[in-house]
Length: 225
Image (cartoon, rainbow, N blue to C red; front, top):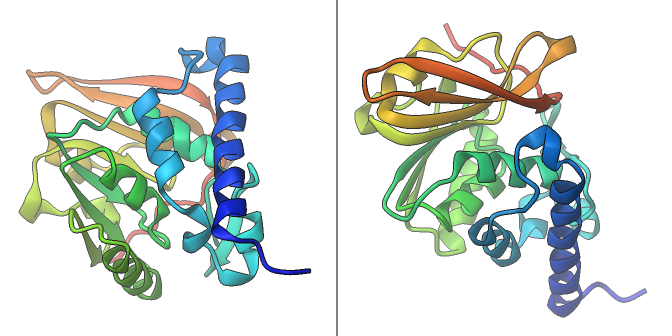
């Protein structure tokens, strides 16, 4: 069988976004909205997800399922990635911190929507691969660093929005400190058997409020030192 062409992959990507839209419609009561944001949908259409998974899995990149990427890590299910992006609501003027770069897919989606993306990855091999790929694809508004994501990236704080693609019992203090007043953080919170995707809002006065969205299952946020 001949390999899939870019045209085939474009059709699959469009189908992926349609499936995500169906999830939003069916789960509207649970997640608080029944329609995928148009800007997020357009970003998902533009980012070639098959480039951000191991080459042998490229044909599966647009299935609505997580896929292994090495080091016991996965790239998130497309619906979950879309939901987290939608809940974060990154705007063209904003600076976003991502914790957990992986191979760079989520950073690419965020880069389509925000002014600047700063992304931190604890696995050096992932960070170097993502940085090279994102640069090759023309994403000049993404900067990648190897490090402990729970400590954020203080040199570029405060951030308008923060997205964490790994779970912790509570939002790391450093991330809350680096979040701009009126900013928003989205991440899974709770123990392994009861993680909940959560939207954390920081008021202009610095007050923190959390809104649970839905049960999820992520790997734990790794810390260093």
